[in-house]
Image (cartoon, rainbow, N blue to C red; front, top):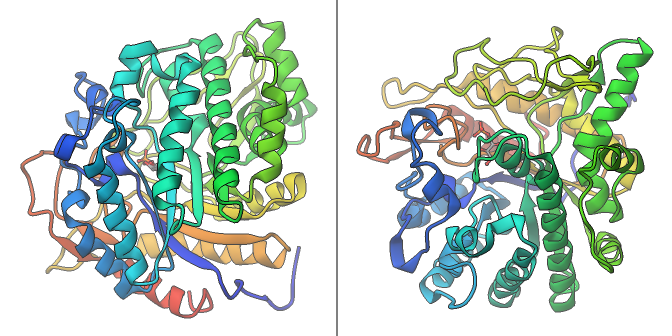
Length: 482
Ligand code: BGP
């Protein structure tokens, strides 16, 4: 759609930035914290780039005051961060750890001191390892109760001050990487049946958490953050248009329909059932999912890239566990599901050094699709560019990051003009941080952190990049000056 004049962003728009506990905090065994599945997984040889871990990460656990001060100077309106389950319940259930609760109390209060709205992610992938040992974590339905118990503890403690809650971060990623690709814990490959079962457990945990929150704080805003890659059909060939429909049902709507409607898409279900991999649901589940969906306030979107769907022959390419984690451009491979679709590169679009497609218009697509399919407000909970940054004379010039963010914000503004209700835009990330599989060299932050892959390298000093000052202006002008 074309509008002669832009209405711009809403007055109370939340300009933000995001992080996740494991990627920034460090202090992996500090003050009674338990061991998480990631604390374990990164120690398996070959799993992460140059064996990097979040043991120390960027030491946000000890430097949060300095980080929040920089946020305040920038004028940030919201900061999205996650809570480490293992700081609250070191064993996943049982005894609560007061020191862990206190840490997030302090962080929240520090943010509020400067008028920064905390946006809290309950779960950003770091599950207590004890639950893996007790009953195989997400594979067992028992986790639903432990998850809800953990979430309720957070609501009880912080619900008076936290108004925005995100239940799950990228359920589609942690489950597909964990049970299909073997690249996240528990490192299983091609276990499709379990993949769908685990997802059903996560859906139930999400839904029951939404219900618990709304009972305690009816006015709180809640949603899940989905890694949304809108999909283009390869061309006008009908088989390729159908490949896009298959991709959408199985890769996008499979999750978003649950969050927004509380039901699985019918054709995806039929396909899974025919192959004997549809999840087992218990009596009453459908009702709970629906009830929670009716109470969800927004769709959280982590937007990085779009993809292309092309028909994939039954003997065609499958899912591989290779990925460009080195930053050597051009090393990614085409992946697909035989008989349905494959995802070739889009030659209309540039890519990052890690072969992620750069497509600013895709962010508008996300908002448009969510608006017309679900009529829900949107929180962009992540969007950003992973790049190599260099310090020159104590400064970091990152015009590529500014160009990336500017182009995406321009498209987001158009989404607002299109009538989409966009509540917030959080860049990934605030400070540089650990990229799960790609180490510390893949940087996303507005604030540079002096550290390399080696645990003992760097001073961990913070230096605002050029993009920091640029975003400050964007916030000041409510997105008018880009
Ligand atoms: C999302 C995750 C983030 C973050 C980001 C960038 O999938 O929610 O935690 O890591 O992607 O990804 P990467 O670090 O792989 O470049």
